[in-house]
Amino acid sequence: MPIHNKACSCLEVTHRVPHRRRFLGASLAVAATTFAAGVPIEPARAEALTAAQREKLSPDDILALMRKGNKRFASGRREMHNYLAQQRASAAGQHPFAILLSCIDSRAPAETIMDLRIGDVFNTRIAGNIENPDVLGGMEFACKLMGAKVILVIGHTACGAIKGAIDHAELGNLTGLLDRIKPAVAATEYAGERTSKNYAFVDAVARRNVEMTIASIRRDSPILAGMESSGAIKLAGSMYDLKTGVIDFFRA
Image (cartoon, rainbow, N blue to C red; front, side, top):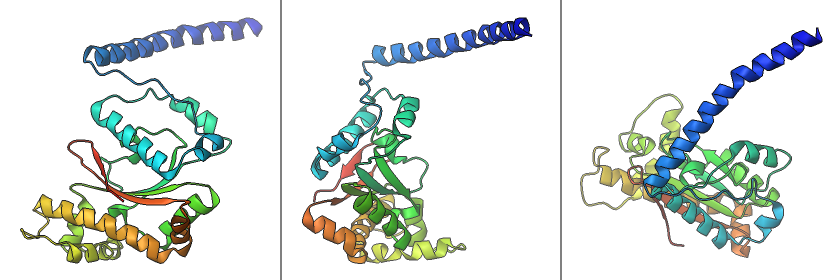
């Protein structure tokens, strides 16, 4: 039996090594191509955010980190992420510095487009990045109980939920969700064609929707409004451009 186990072990190693070599070779090839193209990969930061590190950051510092992360993403200068190390380092506890409210669009994964790590942020994703009581509850948990210092609402260009609200689309529970976006459609000042086929109008509504969502968060959550008034947190809005990969962070 010991001989059989030893033989199996050797057999497993024999099968595993080529796979590892292929993986390593592919990784080196990607790195070589990246450097040859003049797009260096940034060195990795610590595996997971600690409470001490977060406490040193102000809300403005955190927004600056997210801006820099998006610049890295949009220019191809991303950090080298060891996601397994990040997962292991954050498994025992989390200390996110922000909570994001973003859309479910598959082309706008918030952590990726800001080059963030596992454990850096809470992320609520809902079509049209709208707020409701459940979303607010998550934000209150993130900020009041867990110490997040920034609430960032992220809209994006060519948003399907915005188009649906403009078109008065109806489909099961989606109908009620789109009703929450329609006030932004009505509130958007736009001189051109006000249809979902006019992407400039769609993007203008998406931006207005972000602004109105931030106002709604302040109105509907006295807890978050109070934290903002005291300077403990900051609410901010942004728009992600699907074509350029760039996030436009609104000025406060």
